[in-house]
Length: 197
Image 1 (cartoon, one colour):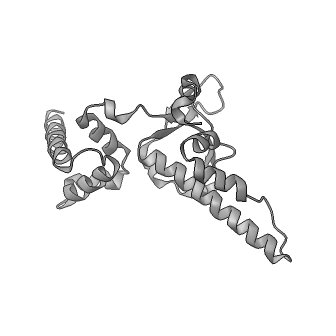
Image 2: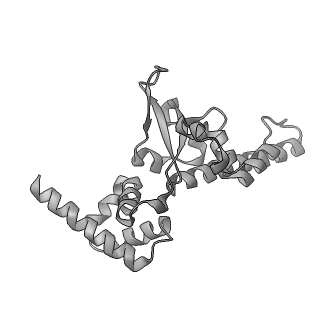
């Protein structure tokens, strides 16, 4: 079922990662569900092969979900305070999201893992369709989703060109000259704000 046919209140409350993947990356999800095998027998090479194929399919489904997040289609939020069911679902920072790899994402239990064995429960929230927003706002939001080292390129020689290309990959529907112009205006606004503060 396409994402736009899911009841809006489902997305408003956030979806478990497996449900979001099923809706927005159905081929990767179907491949994972078809091939996933929870265990293998060491003495049985066929069992090991099937298990490894399942792990590869799982990794591809995790990567598909991460791609949706990095492209700004969905965002991950975690409950804050964590143990409080009355807590609020708070968006994860772009630095946390940018550092995630496929093994960090637990689709079935809707968790992300950090080093040291720490896990956070997360839900996926649909981001409003980007085309309704002004180009400048879309660029600012895409810039905010970059990691801190990527954002720091804005102050380095040659960094702006690298950032423009990275932003254009995410906002491929925006003509490159328009993106360059709007990004230049944004940088000018940020510079004026920094001087005032």
